[in-house]
Length: 394
Ligand code: AOF
Ligand code: ZN
Image 1 (cartoon, helix red, strand yellow):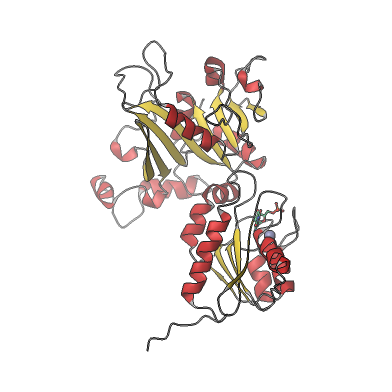
Image 2: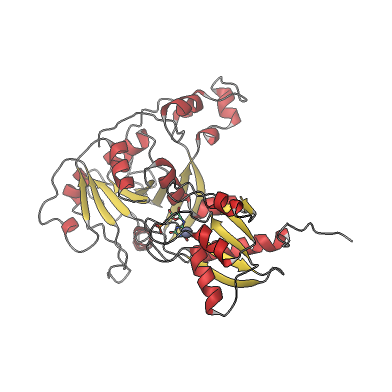
């Protein structure tokens, strides 16, 4: 008979994995926006049965582990002897709430399984504290799923800059306006409604000051009936041109922040300092081009309409790319049909993924050794991405 290996905490691998999938699903119930990560936690009894669950509901509310312990007690279950399965390493700090590592130790939990280690310098250290108390901790169970769930938050905490999603709404030939400047509406109502649901999930929306002036956008997150979503992102205008007193940006919606700078890296760090984890950039072409040229875009949302304009402004201008090997490449995450339009969600490739083996050979570089782009990245940026140009004008 085949014996399934048993972990030191008495749980079989399949049971732990199932519990982690549940913890990830719980985490997704929390808000996507806000300064805090989405975290889920499941408590298992020695037979692998779930006895309590919890997830984090937003900054200032109990962390997932505390919520799971409270859930156990509210059902008259003593958490002593249980195993905690949690999507993020338990915190070790007194922040908006108490340290979860201590709460788990005091509760008598016997083992902890974590998907992703906590990169937050003020909160990290929970695994060490638990181990010092004699509680075994494993880190890395379903780590890829955990990383995917927390992608914007992890990026922001690791780099000090928010995760940047660039939205483009274009004709099939990549244009955002006809020759006479008319642009409403290239994409249809379903694409626009989708874009509003994305706005309701981010911390901030940014536009260049030229776009703020010319388009007079409101940058609110609106439901199909025109009503405002409960969460309204911070509205950010990048650049030096004044936002007029009667601009829609000053009307109902999230607070308005103008950053009168052309240094995009500094502007993003300023937002990072304000705990903005995810910013959606909505225009115009100058800002999009500058961000792409500076390699500061992490994700693309390209809403493409089956419309051809043949002439007129394009969504993205000159990126300084002169040969195909220098193209700003993204990896497709998802494709969705929205009425007549298509939404392509694509993610920036990490330097190591940046070039296929064939591309490297074609460019005359060794497929085995690091490419010039990778070497530059290691030297030029803190988070290891190739910097094309250090500063860009908006
Ligand atoms: C959460 N929810 O379930 C867990 C977190 O702002 P504070 O004081 O509540 O602490 C936030 C930090 O705590 C967060 O950055 C992360 O490092 C850690 N764990 N945070 O909001 C949770 N487990
Ligand atoms: Zn905590």
